[in-house]
Image 1 (cartoon, protein in one colour):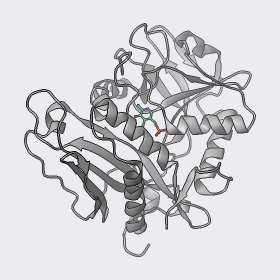
Image 2 (image 1 turned 90 degrees about the vertical axis):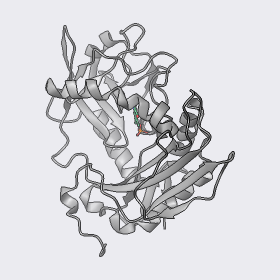
Image 3 (image 1 turned 135 degrees about the horizontal axis):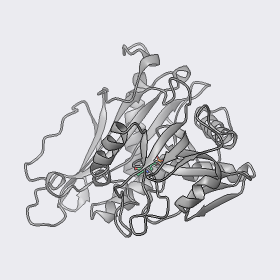
Image 4 (image 1 turned 135 degrees about the vertical axis):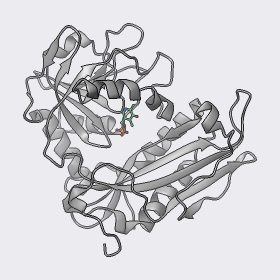
Length: 340
Ligand SMILES: *Cc1c(COP(=O)(O)O)cnc(C)c1O
């Protein structure tokens, strides 16, 4: 790590351009060969599909240094598959899984100096994305696309310790039934910015979105799935076709089952929340972020685990998944991709 000058212990979650990124173009009905470039800028036609009709999908994953000094990524094949599903929904050419994996391997391999040390708790955050470059003015899918993958070093999510957050029930909806809530697209985030800023202005850390049709079921936040634990240690995750299928959530559920927990993936009524002992948000950024309190117009729900620490069951799951990522807990077959 001789070549970059970073204070690893003070890294936050900000974009910092690193040496090399991957780029590949789709033209004339096929993907051209991709490769690394040092150019962090993109020059686009003024009428590019991304600028007019918002054809863009993305992913997020991390490369870590393990305790024994290896460099690994966590289940990148699932990011590749999910981005293919997202692309299809927006009528974009899916990036073939092999190209996606090549991009991950090449970017991580070419930017090793930018991967935070194991001890820092940080990681190299990877952002693969696909967007329409070809001009469109009549409403239709573009003919040309670009796939890029860049990395940026990020610090530990819990630099100041793991503290439960307080969230509010949003007056806005995140995703319509049969809409685009189940794909990872920038368009889902554009509309969440206003409620996100409002939540912050009102002193909350995040929004809880309810189902748009009936406002009675719990969906997710703008960028993380929910995980609840009942007083009998049953793990409950909300089910709905407008929730984004989090890879972290699916992995935590698989580990929980291996550890012997009972898991229920089912619709969760907002009125049920009071019966849960623990609540958390899960996603690549934090793995699990504990939720201490949920505030709605007419009531405040305080989970038994409180506002001081993560509850015992979520802590156990958190430590297990972090251990898998950092090489201290044996990983299920195929979950870890080592990069040389
Ligand atoms: C990315 C994302 C998540 C978390 O997914 P992971 O694969 O676990 O990182 C959850 N909800 C939304 C809306 C997302 O965009």
